[in-house]
Image (cartoon, rainbow, N blue to C red; front, side):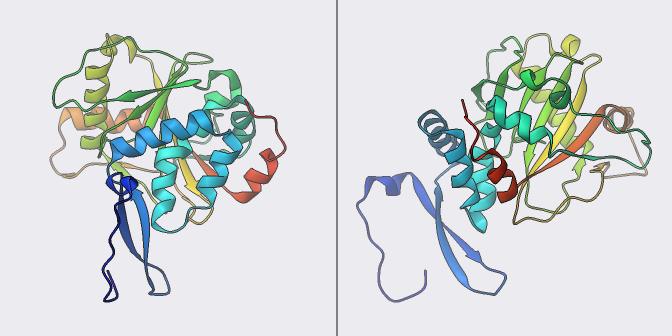
Length: 269
């Protein structure tokens, strides 16, 4: 760190956080505190969600700046989807990202079924040491408590009006394309976590909701599923691309101060 003075503290909280260095757009060097790892961040977010009102959670996220914007969104932003009144307001702000091959718009399942939102969270442990498969449940926000989970930052399932996996991805980038290998890794994780996934996933559509902070750049186009080697596509890769292009619908939500003002006076659950 800059300066000649040593920074020393015996505060117990120092065991839970680390210093994040960032260079601002103006070239200034700044430092922030962040959770020491994703698992600690998940636990902190769980406690905050239980102790704070939804409105206060949103305020905490919107007060984040720079490097901590994405971290706050990852750890707290998904919990917006657990509050019915917020979901009702949120779906009005969803913008569909449509591929050039699709002419007709399609509303999100949350637009058609506000009550389909999750009401509790379940953390997903890493697969390294093995996991016990559990039944897939609707009304549950599944949050990976591990780093580098493929494709999404969280997801949940909705049964009506159509069986749908809703994937949630927090991003500050103007594009968030994926690859066939990432999608394959995600489906392999789902098969490891849930009983009978192969049968359950049949005829299941997907929705990807990209959640962005007001300070980030809008996504303007459909997010592709690319292949690393286009000259030698395997049958598996062809199937994944066909599925992505045919059964995945994409939406964007901006977590802006305007949205916060809309829900400021709402009675949250």
